[in-house]
Amino acid sequence: MDTLVFVIISICIFFGWYYNKYRERMAIVAKLPGPYRWPFVGNAALFIWKSPPEMINIITEIHRQFPRITCLMLGPQPEILISDPKLAEVVLGSQKLIDKSDEYSFISDWLATGLLTATGKKWFQRRKVITPAFHFKILDQFVEIFDKQSAVFVENLAKSKGQPLDVFQPITLCALDIICETAMGVQIQAQINSDSVYVQAVKEISGLLSKRIFTFYLRNDFIFNLTPLKRRQDKLLKILHGFTDEVIVSRRAELMNDKKQDSSSNHDQDDIGVKKKMAFLDILLQSTIEGKPLTNMDIREEVDTFMFEGHDTTSSGIAFCLYNLAKYPDVQKKAYEEVRHVIGDDLDTPVTIKLLNDLNYLEMVIKETLRLYPSVPMYGRKMQENIDMNGFIIPKGSNIGISPYFMARDPTLWENPFEFIPERFESDNQYHPYLNVPFSAGPRNCIGQKFAMLEMKSTISKVLRNFELSVAPGYEPILVAELILRPDNGVMLILNKRK
Ligand code: HEM
Image 1 (cartoon, rainbow, N blue to C red):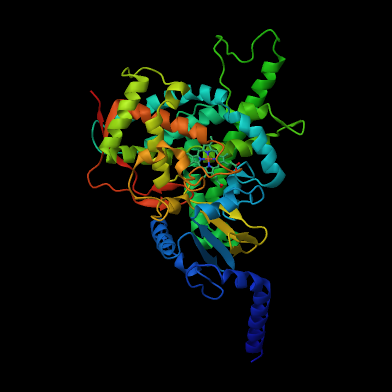
Image 2 (cartoon, rainbow, N blue to C red; image 1 turned 30 degrees about the vertical axis):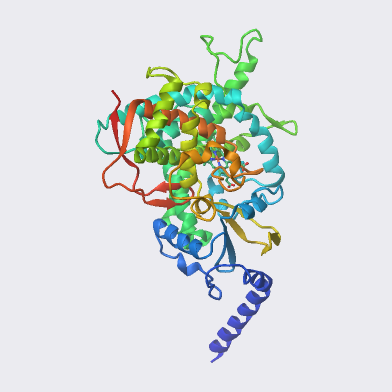
């Protein structure tokens, strides 16, 4: 009897506490569109035990019923999905609403608080220091790396000899080679030795982090720490952080050494007088914030951020672009003719930044690909206070997810949204500036977008110069929207060598 009274009193105290704590939030949330929210659990039950492809279907259905803005509750936590350009503008255009949503804290185990996850003064200072690393002159010297790695990539593709091939894996390895050499100045040769421990760790960690974010119960630290995944994550992070630390220490030592050398020698040139390339890491090593150089830990978080943001995103973009070129032969023909016209027929002609910039039609094809298949299907912000979003009041503590994926598929926002029409982008000005935002927009937009566009143009144009593409019989991509949008079943293409 005593136990029963104790249980009833405890439940009453819990309800009282819960009601008091979330009363205001619940009253605000009640006015937001969205599916029925059960007391206490909200909509959490919808997502438990669901596979990633099932999740995208569930959210697509909710979005169909409640387009533009939907509020889901994961327990007491509001998760607000936005797919309306005017609402997106309120958030993305703001200098104040720059805090990232709770999901990013899981990525921070790897990236700490680098540019992607940082906020406030730290983010502002880092953005200022890192912006020059994406200057035209720096990107110009990276094009040679893009070209060199794209050549290895097409050599690997040629091994398929006209048989169906999943191109996703070779694309990822090529993107990894490119980002390692440009971010750290290190050639890991992932395309030649895909068994490298570091390469395997980079590939595995993204999957593990996604699994944690999208598996409801694994979001809880206590539960996660009890699982074998936590031990695996610790092991992977040791490899990843250890590798970056080693590279930073050795580059710093090289730089000091260079400085000590006779002032008459040219630090920017190697032993045989060839101009040395500056990796992002070198730029960070030479940067200062408030007069102080960045520490190894400061640099590690930024280099790791480049590694994370700079390879899965471009892999997804290249893969879906090759798929679309294969699926739409007329688009492929037009893109190929442009590549021949701009670069010429000689397969050995190296590309330059000028040539890549002249590939205007290919750029439209990439833009249309990223519209329908945005590499980052959703990005998030955390509201630190109640905000009025064009008449919708969003309560403090909400996570907001802005979805370029759903914006691109809304027939009230685009004419024939599911049709692949690169010509939509002949003039960018005809659309709302926050309608097509695969690279986000506003102060926290993607700092690497020019880099990404050049890399994608370099690899895709190289493939077009070498092969005619078609889709393998029966293949249709099954989309999975985790941190990155990817095809769950790879990208099966047939590549026939051009005569
Ligand atoms: C197709 C390729 C890419 C796409 C679609 C893409 C997309 C995005 C998006 C949507 C964001 C905003 C994320 C958010 O608000 O949470 C972002 C941020 C960022 N991206 Fe990219 N990205 C791509 C390639 C790259 C590359 C190649 C790099 C680096 C070499 C890079 C570095 C970054 C960084 C550092 C941020 C954080 C910027 C900040 O918060 O100030 N991205 N990217």
